[in-house]
Length: 322
Image 1 (tube, one colour):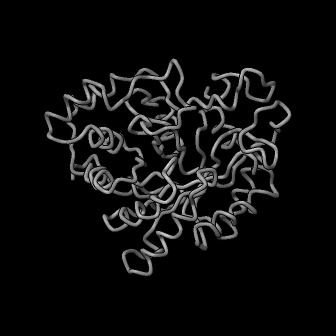
Image 2 (tube, helix red, strand yellow):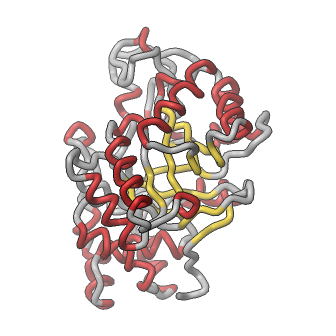
């Protein structure tokens, strides 16, 4: 293990997070349980979930089976979930955290994130009309998140898809700082300014879609979406020279950058291959060459939150991300 790669990081609240986890977004139902169980057998202890993924019960079944089979102990697991956009009101935060805990079969979460800096009416998961968006002050939502820590329902709290400006809003009033900001991050979107800001505030960056989100839903494909990341010639060249996969190069790049990374797979061979990325050590020259691929290009643009016909609180790409 090189000195630049850590298997765990200590968060700003003193809790510890594994640097590599299994993502579960858009994982096929009926397959995910076995995938999570396989990951736990391989050695993963960090599982990333969310209410809106609509698959947390399968994750919970896998966790229960792994614990019952003495594959892992709960105290050694790190389970993350996320608060969806129509649950931002004070009275809904704890309610839906408990729904997630029930689905997962857990007494507490290790990490709970505000999934997006967007609020919508109750039961309006994906708003399509202007009046489905509502303005819930971030202070209301964050204080309710802090209450979850105080009540022992979650150990740590953080955010996802938050810009520098939106994190600064929370830092102006919070009693408990966000411990992580989970965002899309890969060589076409290196997120260096955001990472540097987060590190200056002792907030870790967690990288989702680190492989370029190859299995994302078709609704996320836009004319200006970047080309498939796994087909990049520079990445293929580096992988071939090291006799490893492109996916392993991409995960190693995140780990050596000091990010938490949560690649998604339901294929046992790829789950194992991704875990073995700890063994891949990139040179400074290779790291620089990968950094140079940055295009500030997103696969997950959040366009569903600023449809062209809306007059909701978020109207443009820049307003959401910058």
